[in-house]
Image (tube, rainbow, N blue to C red; front, side, top):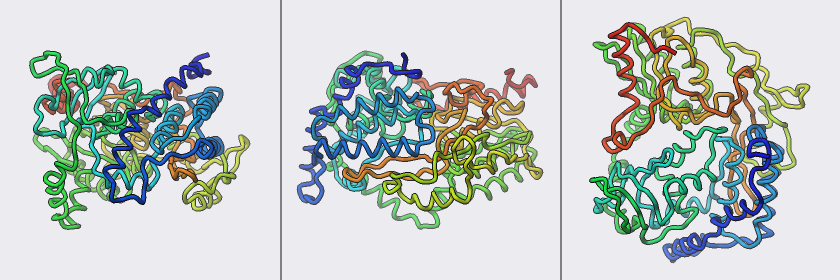
Length: 522
């Protein structure tokens, strides 16, 4: 039996993997956290929950998923998921802290292969982490394949590791082993490895994962390449917020606070959606960092495509590399401005049920259940289908529809509604996708309504998608995201010198077409 068709690893192997959950270094780290909070004795971050209490929470965690999650066995079969649930439950032999138990739940959640299902700390622990000035993993890290590259060094006085420095190992763990370990706790849709690489690379996620699994020490033992390509092994101090925050972050907060509310709103909207037009070269560059409501996207799309039409712009670049999705209504509207045929949002969109014995653990569940009563109908398969979207066809916009060449830039952060948009126009004659595989699944996802469930004893929360969406049943269910027409991947040089390698590739394609008159041959 294998991982996707059946059980692929023995219980002994799983237990060995889970030993990192109770790593002594993590315990030491939590004790350190407590020492940082000597004046705040009301919350104890190193509190240990008895095994019977943890088992009760774990059982509720499992039952909530089994009763409600519509894609629990979509990419990982039931016998495999049962194995992960059972072996993880049996590994709870002693008391655990909240971070240790969260790691255990994250390990199981990652096996679902659903990027919309993830685990978070309790509200109290999250607040504690936000306010405790603890020492941090000192580097931002970009990861791909077997490569780790620093993107920032928080210790500004230390010039040994800088942007573009390649790190070979940390505390005697090679780059590949670190990546493989983090993947065991990282969620993504199906088998999109690009999504996992990007997830552990976003912001300071790499450091957060490292701290969560192994704890943080005063210093880290790194093997890396210096500026001359010479391999070196040296110790690097953790980042101490106490000594730096008064100077560095105080200035940042002061600058933020000085912005007026209206200006803040304008800046946020510009960062989430903007368009720049070069009439001389007939190129428009649209940045879309989200499809979420609250960003006036409908007005933005209307004005943008009216301007493109009026100025006869022949090339439209849409940057979706940071777009994690949002409201499908917004992504559908953008699709209508570009697509050249009618389309459906989904062939299938359904929930498992309208009621569960475990609803009391799910936030705002009455609101979602009421929506289901009015919007869904039980079909012969026993599922509650959102029939409108299964039947309704959307048509291309008649006003200011864009017929020029479209270049979509995608990557591992292109997820959810962004994948719906990208997948809908993939293969269209005037559309070229440049970059990397999307983090969201091309075949479909589990999303639509996503409340938080909260475990009663630890307060740990996890996202619970209620609807299962299949975009097109005729697509091959291979577990991949939307694949690019032109693949462009990171390089050490691009990271080091902050080169927009995907953007440059798109401009090269436009120049090539202008010179030869030929578009990309698919």
